[in-house]
Length: 167
Image 1 (cartoon, rainbow, N blue to C red):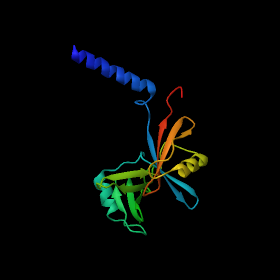
Image 2: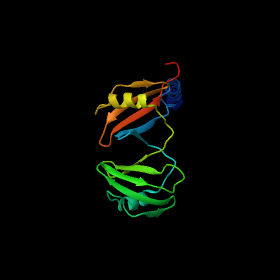
Image 3: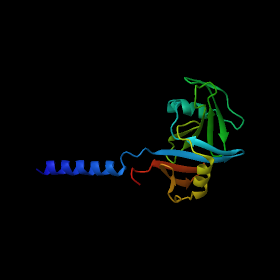
Image 4: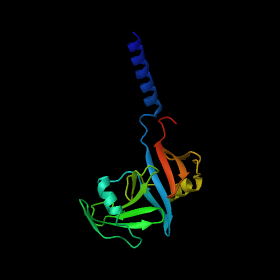
């Protein structure tokens, strides 16, 4: 009887979370940097993928002026050493031809992709960028999404999620 009661409680909790949109929310994370002609937007998800070992091999060749080309399954890749990370260019890839590589405190690789599905207007990017704080700025509403921006080592990181239905 206790197992049935626990199962019913879990089902009720799951339905409640789905109803409020918590479980169904589609999160998306972007990195926004300023460049000479406006904002540079990097996406946490992209269409081009390589194994971590290949990325580490490419990163090892990084130089400020661009390292040697390395052959990959996506074509040639070249790494550029930047003040806050490494940028990899994939000129022969069918899409998503640039990545910004970051390492977390544990040494794990995080790729920021030049191409992604989320497209924001310059006004939205400006609002997000100006709202960012180190501990997280205020929650902004951008049409059918919420945004919360944080100032980080590489720029402004923003988390986007869908506004629950009926809000």
